[in-house]
Length: 95
Image (tube, rainbow, N blue to C red; front, side, top):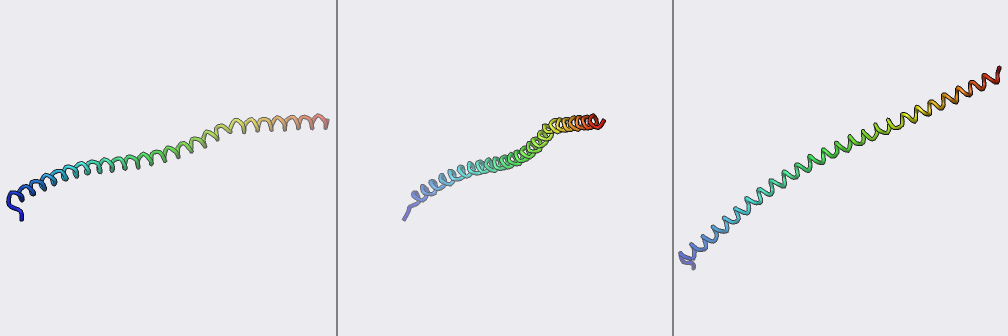
């Protein structure tokens, strides 16, 4: 059986252990809060990146359309010149 002094020593040790565990739990709570904030930040970043990717895709499409316009105009001009020359040749041979 334990005497009074041994009980006091055991209770004192348990009190110190409880104090240490409370300190460690406080640290873990802070760490958990930091991890949660980080997770929210990563989620916002992922959403932002998705939006940016969609905008880049739209810009690429617009640039491709703008890039193709001069070529289409050139093709139209060449077709008009060929049609004019063919018309002139047909008119020349008919006369």
